[in-house]
Image (cartoon, rainbow, N blue to C red):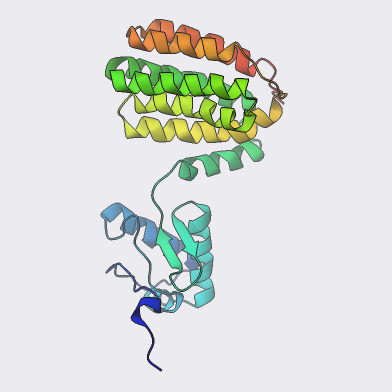
Length: 247
């Protein structure tokens, strides 16, 4: 019986050439080669890698070595491993996970302290506010204002989970107002860590004074007054982290 072409597994979407691996920790060299191909452009986001067997042949290693390499790259946020007829190893779109995960591991290992994280937040946000004052547009500021309006509406409806999502989005939108993708990635990574690390160490509770402080930050951005925006930010962070358990 002839197979339906539509149900056949997709073919690899890359012409990348792999070279034999000869080191004892072969899975690391496999990963290093794939990373190098991302830098040279041989591989790009969305590409599907060849099958495990084809990779094993190309690299001159066993399939278990390839599996270990793919798992390592998946944990690093570089690959997405999909199951099914259209499954395989795909190069992921870049996202905040690629920075956040290693930092979360360092925090878990005690290499980064919560006070260091909070201090870094203050410094990074200050730089982003300065840039947003210089490059933000009326449309950027309107998006931030709409975000604040949604926060207030969700608080009144006691929709706390959605309100938390909007609270995180607030600083993402400020980063977007810099029109610098590096700033967006940095702030998204930092917010992801803060949400799952710092917030777990802060007693739950609604703080109604935060939205007015956010509105003061927005008003300063519209006035192109970076010093004032940073002053309101520091006041905001003092309220947010006052109850954080620092140990």
